[in-house]
Amino acid sequence: GSCRHRCCPGRNNACWAPGARWARCYCDSYCERTGDCCEDYQATCRRAAVGCVVGPWGPWSECSSRCGVGSRARSRQVTVPPRHGGEPCPELTQRRGCLGEHPACRTAR
Image (cartoon, rainbow, N blue to C red; front, top):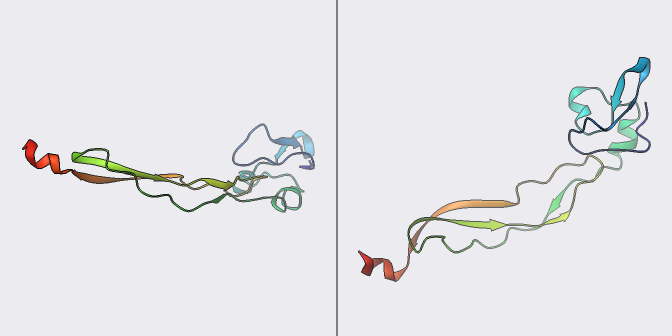
C-alpha cells in the first residue's frame, strides 16, 4: 500500500490503503505505535510532518473571586498547526488557584 495521496495526524482509522494480501496498511501517525504503517509511510509522511508550534503564555487573569477561593487562567495561541502527522499541540490553557483579597472583603467580615 502507498501513502502517496494522504497522510493523517493522530489516530484515524479512515486513513488507510490496501496492503499486501487484502490487509490494510495505515497512513496515520498512530501507525508507528501499532506497527501497521504502509511501506512508504516514513518517506512520504514523516518527511512532510510539521509539529505544532505555540506562542508564549499570556498573562494570568484576575482572580475569579473578589473574596475567597477562586482561580486564575492564562492561555497561548497556536502559531503553526500540526500537519501530516506532526506532533500535536500541547495544552493551550492553564488554571491555578488564587485567593481574592479585595479591600471590600475585610469590611464584609
